[in-house]
Amino acid sequence: MKKLTIATTQYGLTDIRTEEQFWTGIAEKVRDAAEQGAAMIVFPEYLTAHLLSLQPAMLHDEACYFLDLKTEEYRRFFRQLSEAEGIAILAGTHICKADEETTGTDEEEYVNKAFLFFPDGRVETQSKVHLTPEEQIRWPLTAGNDLNVFETEWGKMAILTCYDIEFPELARAAALRGVEMILCPSYTDSAFGYHRVRLCCQARAVENQVFVVLSGLVGALSEDRPQVDAGYCQAGLFTPCDLPFSPDGIIQVGELNLDMTVLAEADFRQLRDNRAHGAVAPFYDRRPDVYENEHRKTGH
Image (cartoon, rainbow, N blue to C red; front, side, top):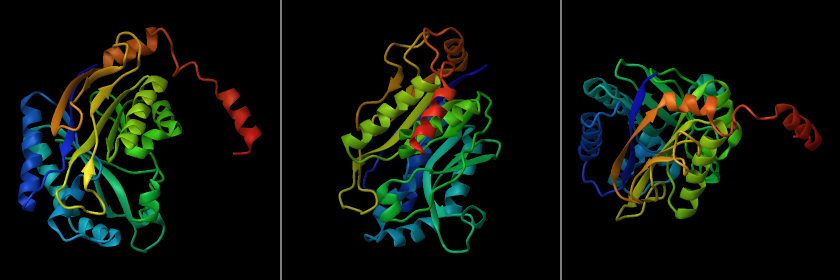
């Protein structure tokens, strides 16, 4: 059982002048994290939407088309960077065309998809399952219909993007399939949205006795863009509120709304000790029989 030194980013929406500046800035963050011993780094939701700041303001469908054109470059860049630096990179999320086998149609549809690149060339992906009202109406995007649970050298992981973490059923499904760490790239533009996501991250860690890693956008662009113009976040690594962890369930968090990378250590042995010897065991003490009975009463 290994310890994972993980870096999670509060990625600053600063003004950039060129695409090269965007890619170079990301590479610097990755190299810095790797030099500090991180084996994985997590970037936030809508990471590549930062590139929209280099273009005149677009309608949402135009933005989808523009960002999808960057997909091959995005995949190539992060695949090469992960291999070169020897670090796994959750490259935030990227708007790209949905697979035909996913949508069941040949119509042009787009998804908000997370990509996790490993140094050996493996890539794990997860389309956002729960879309916000804005993503459903204004973009509009297509929701993912499957949860990808994948093996890593530290333990099983899953990616729940932003709004996904607010639905306890999805995190519980992940935990029941053996997930011990949930990665949560997010984009929230207000304190309201941030606290919804942050508090749900911590609730999911308590309920399922898992690690939850949160990353988000911070800062603001000098010129508004309809898709992404400002972010509010305090990234961190969260645990159950029980021994052998701290009472508040926080291993490490950043400084609110500061462009920075937060490094923290996740000890999977401690997580398994918590499941075996914690003061409470919410993951094991659940009552599916009662829940099913209540579901039948509601008809939902």
